Length: 156
Image (cartoon, rainbow, N blue to C red; front, side, top):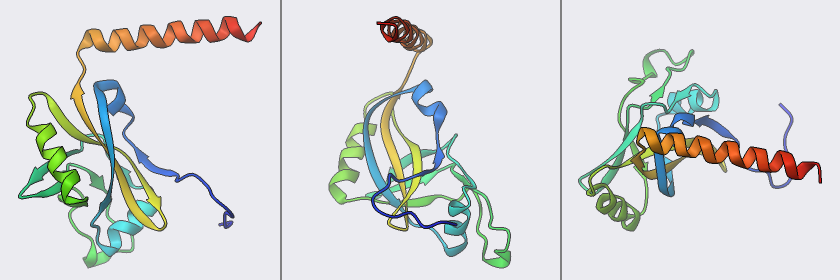
C-alpha cells in the first residue's frame, strides 16, 4: 500500500447511509471506541455494519449497541461476539448533553460514520429524531428542485 503524504481527509471505513434518510440529524459528536485487538483489525478491513446501531447512555457512560463488527479471519479464540456492546469514549460534559437530549421523546443517538483518525477508530454519532413519510418526500422534492436549478444554471 502506498503511503500518503501530507494532510488528507479521514477516509470512512463504514457509513450509515440510511441514517440521513430515516432521521433528521440535529447535532453530531466524534467519539472514540473501546475495541479489542482483533476488532480493530476487522475495522481496518472495513468489515463493519452500522445500519441497525444506536447509542444508549447508562450510568454516565455511552454504549454503542447493535453495530456488527465481523470476526477477524485469523483471530481464532481471541475473537469476541460481533454484536457486543462497545463503550464510546467521550468527555463527561458531552455524555451529559447526550443524556439530556435523549430524554426528549422521539430523540435517539445513531452512529453515522466510522473512520480512522491518527490510527484510532472514531465514530461520528448524531443526535437525531425520526422522519415521517411526508418529511422524506419533502426532502426528495427539494433535492430534485435543486438538481433542476443546477442543470439550468450550468448552461449559463
